[in-house]
Length: 308
Image (cartoon, rainbow, N blue to C red):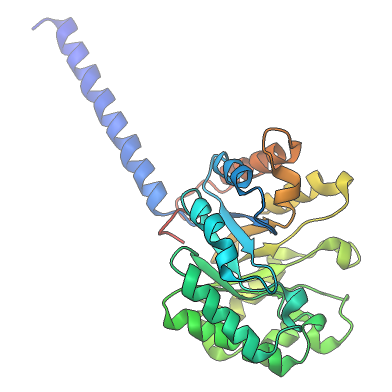
């Protein structure tokens, strides 16, 4: 064998080992995904365009579906089945604005209906939305509703999410301040076992305050030591500031243990669908890519099916 032949064989062997190492590392990264990038869809009309927009993101998204008030679960079967193949699904059992319109019995019946029909396809159940908001009504009624949904989901081995409402210095009743309400009302079972604890925040509704999110999530981690933490809703109706908001939230760099991101831009359907004609789709896409690059390590990667 000539020197040239030996050199070429060694080169081929080295290249093979390099490809093998890259492949192994890629599999490792996929298996250790931890970062979540979410969007919210507040309606499922034009579902084909929604699915196309979501599936064209480079990274697998988590899509939060807002199940509308007084609508039967069957209204969402088609949408859930179509989204199931392209993203992780989080189901919002009922938007906070309508919780006070439901009796405890009606909320329980809704929980049974939705989890019974869609439970196999919905990956995460948001058992309560903005639960400390003053508009949800009587505290005992709110607790009875979310406790039932939590226990139902746990009994069925479904993952659970609870969304809080961040309201520093913009509450009407001090008892509803987020941390005060949580400490006083959330059961120890939930504090130890909720899969996700998320925070809804709209700067427009709270004196344009930009919170110190590192401190907020560090504090939540003390209360919910075993829960994944993130932003559960954000957005603005101010067209001029949408791009700024998307970049600020989706590029957040939080070092709290178990912080997974989320964000769940409320106006995704309005701002990013169809994806080919809405510039904010691209803004969101590149904000996510920038976040991934910023958090490029094995412990802070993307969530995929079966790994959330």
